[in-house]
Image (cartoon, rainbow, N blue to C red; front, top):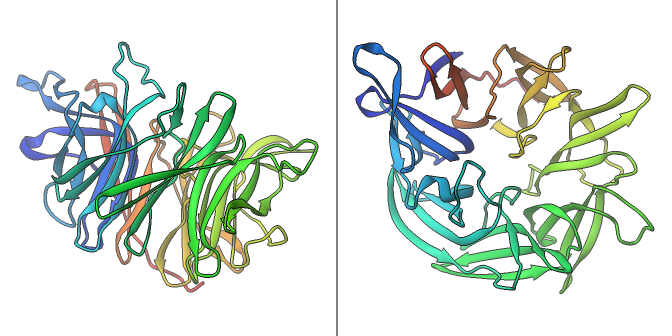
Length: 389
């Protein structure tokens, strides 16, 4: 494992509270988040000073050489809910929200505008507004929105819509620079996720109550168009466990679902990381990836595939004292989860993980240096030898 602070031009340090770490297939990674700033060393080594607090979006981390700062197209403090997806041309499609202007340190949840941009390296090749629902009192929750999904020439993205008297999901679709949206009546559900299957078309996975029951909690329910949007299958019933922050893929050979599980039994209440793969239905076996996991609200149970038929998860495991955590890497093995490594590092601002190239794993988090009075992004690089599944 190699450990390094994120330094950019001129030896400056960059901090990004991580939300996105997306490879472009050419060995480069886009690191982006909802808080980002530059620091430089004061003369004489007397600590660090802000260079820029409101004009950085993140960084491009190359396979070799110095990372490059991505400038923020709007003030950084107004950016929320960033999502990115690699393009065939080596760039990235990026969707992010612009929140209303505010004072103080607490960013509001209300979205003023949505933006779609195309990044070409660190340069914004295109930036265009995305129309949003315009009802009185509408609130779009981009914090828990889906990842981006590309199907053919269309880019999809979903977010929960809070409207007076109605809680629903807004499904966005962009093609050729034109965007449209539709309201799916998911009735109080949250954590919308989108997937695609050849047999079902576009699938919407949401966490919410099963309305066919007199009472229900956080079940994981799949919706499909038939031709209207309707519940199709309950994947995880809340009678077994409460579901939070799910992840789902229905790509052929990569069918997998994962979620943060709120479990309560004779051993007490706890938060676990669960997953199922292969046959995705209520009767499929569930693997416990981690029996005590810490989450940061950003796809905590998202799998990585370093080789065909091999899945890894990078998780924050809570230690016995209940306060500190360590990084754990686990692998799917014979229908269960096998630990591969435990790294004594804790990321107080969360972390993201991705595979920049075959056999390489990159984890981006943050490190607080009390002595130097700075917080800076920390990169952990791993060489992954992929054992057979």
